[in-house]
Image 1: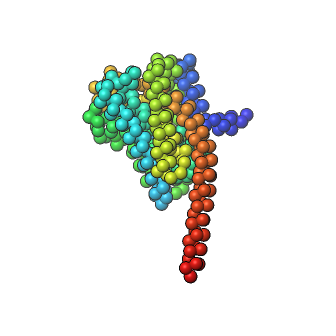
Image 2: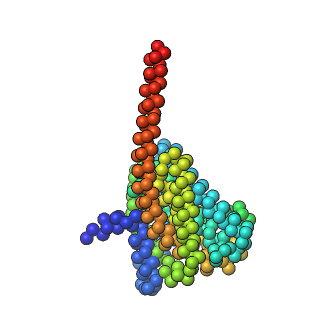
Image 3: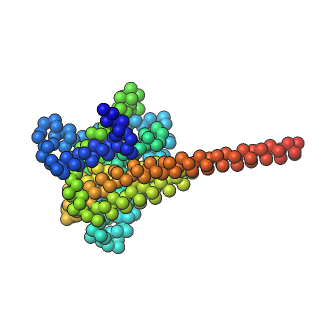
Length: 338
């Protein structure tokens, strides 16, 4: 049976299909993965460990010698993702207050829009990008959790959070970066985790989600997912391509909401209890956004990748012809002058 090959036919299928499978099992057979032992530890409650391990492996893949392009891409994408989500949350809070609009509160919007799914990005980067795009996952990994949500809410004056909670979310990546650069053999070993972990991450994340909760989120949850895809997928693709001076589908690859973002409202509320009334609704809305973006973003990237390829081929050819023509004219001028 060619199971893996079939999964790879779908955009980010190695991660998305296990996620949907875990979500289905948790929806209709919620106790199946709660029998205890290693089964529950891996497939049900292993999210923090798996994400921490992914961040660790991701950090190890950054080579300080080629960090220039990797960091540049990662920083640009991370800033675009953060600024768009932060800006939306600020405007929502300013004009509509904590209640938000259409049931979308600032906590849910900032938490979902600023959180990109690093696993999906890495999978898409491996298919549509190059090694520097894959390496940028380590920078984007900062989005996989409450790190930027806490910074955004704190900067906007909407919450107060201990610095230790923020720092703790990036320590695994930093340690991985150090080890990977001290020992290249460790880098090669840990790099395999970028391939091995996605299906386990996907299933464990899905096992913590429930389609019923997604339905309970209603239109607001669907709207949050669509907003995330189009605001930080389509918009970032356009901006990133302009910055790169060529059509680059990787700009659209951050139009997701990380599965771990479903825990963000709870983490935020634990650090600042004033957010407690928003937690239940925000979790349901974020869960909806996770599923919707996990399905739609890879499809979006596959479409813009085809468009980008055609546009770049046409543009680069025309640009090359113009450059060659200019060179020929310059040579003729020089010869005539001589």
